[in-house]
Image (cartoon, rainbow, N blue to C red):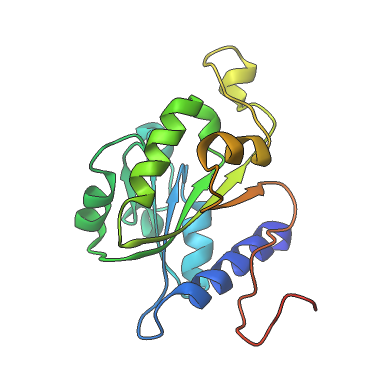
Amino acid sequence: MGENHDRERALAAFAAFVADDDRKPVVVVAGCGAGATVAELRADDVAAYGFDASRSILETAAPSTRERLLEADVRDDDLVASLREAFGINEIDVFVTECMLSFLTVDEATAALDRLRSHDRVGTLLHLVRIDPPVAAQDGEIDATILPPAEWQAACDPDGEDLWRDAIGPLDLPPSDPSDDGDT
């Protein structure tokens, strides 16, 4: 289990905190790969779904997770409608970009995130950013935009509407317990 499981448990607790009390929290993971985060969140009683632009990586997902994954691109204009239709969901409590912004230019990321923020049924946007280049960029197969979370935020979210975190290390999210003031 370890650190990754702890990160997903923290994400699940945060999603439960921001979701309506009358239903399971809904989390969508952009850049989900083979769906490991989706599977972990489901184990923590979250209605989790994911999408990735790579069909080949999606095909490696476990069958029990694959049905909750979609081939899509965060740059798609009709992304939210596609997610709602594919998964039968109405609201997204937490939309996570999981180590995938580096595959976009700053302009592409800004436009995609602005579109997501414009939807009234999409709640918190959480961006998990890695500062090491993806393997494909290290091999020279693709160009990558490598920026630390603070620089991504300054470029794509100057009003600070979203949550930006380093993808490595603890997932420091706002309190998941209303009685927790964050000082503990």
